[in-house]
Amino acid sequence: SEDIRPIIGKYLNEARETVASVVEKKKKEIADIELENKLKSESLDITLPGKRPPFGGRHPVSVVFEELENIFIHLGFEVFEGPDVELDYNNFEALNVPRNHPSRDIQDTFYITDDLVLRTHTTCVDIRIMKEYKPPIRAIIPGKVYRYDASDPSHLPVFHQLDGLVVDENITFGDVKGVLIRFAHEFFGPDTNVRFRPSYFPFTEPSAEMDVSCVVCQGAGCRLCKHTGWLEILGSGLLHPRVLRGVGYDP
Image 1 (cartoon, rainbow, N blue to C red):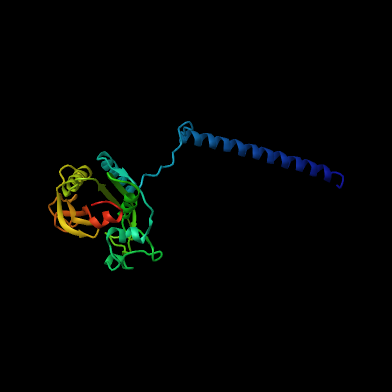
Image 2: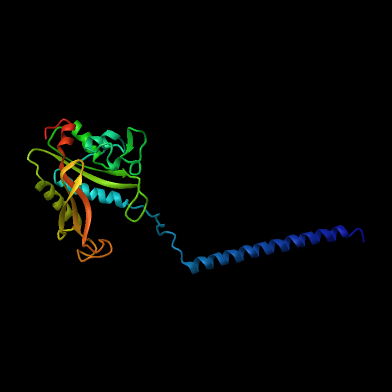
């Protein structure tokens, strides 16, 4: 009848709420049991330290420069630096490189203006050092240099160079050879063979290229040394008298 319908509806609602409450309670109990079982099965020790993010390593060029600097510092040299953007005069003319020299061509040098270039060697810093200091001078100049070269396995438009400068009385080519042989034995190993070949550089006279026995085949011949057994690593020589006069030194 109409009189008992509200009463039945009330009981049905109460029953529905009771069932829903029991179901939610059971769901929570099941979830708690599953979480407990999962924690037991994984055996996670939350007291262990977390994983540390990896740290970067030092750049290979920086590592090599530091090794080179240490070798020459032990021989009494000081480390100097200079600007990457250099005066055309310091980069070329002061080093006895005239205007018509092939290295002055736009194909080899990045010109910023007619009087400014990206330095093609760190030898230009020699001029700055000699203008500021009086002999005796023993300096090395590490740094980036720039040349208009296409990129290949042995060429890049930006690379690194270390220049050495000694100015003193009674310096001979024997001193040059002695320092460079010592450097080669320290850097490449005491069993490294060394040879010097006559060459030409505008800012040195006499001049010589220096080769070391191949670090891969130890002189037997391989692809790296083009089967010659030797690797050319640097040019050397005594400062040209014109360069010395240009900075006010008496040759």
